[in-house]
Length: 180
Image (cartoon, rainbow, N blue to C red; front, side, top):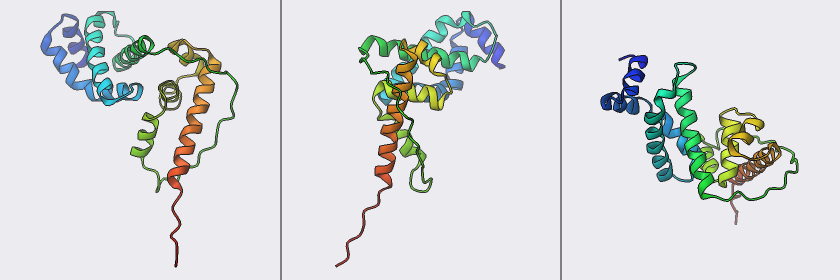
């Protein structure tokens, strides 16, 4: 079945079409949820809740732009909305920090390790880092989505980069073997 037909059937609340759409996009959208969630379990919950929202609001999709992009935006907004309800954002000094230079030895630092340390960042830093570095949003867009100032977005990104740099550097320090 074509994507257009699948969307059309989902707009009619066809359960089989909804199941097929879920199977088609669940893995891609789960990775989006995982980037913006605190844990694997929370990402699973956000995926399920996001699909409920998608199925309830699919009639709002007007066949303009990427359908996958529309669903991704729904997932991100759902995750951020939950985060806003759960967390009181801390006040962050909006000083402009110099962005650190990070040199990575590809042979010593794996992609899995990078994803792990990104997931370990404090919530706000992780979200800003993901939006900016991985998804290509501008600081202005991030500020609007997260309801923070542009300066706070820049500051959070700089702090995330510093934390990541420190963790990468610490992982690359090889213990020196002692000789007797």
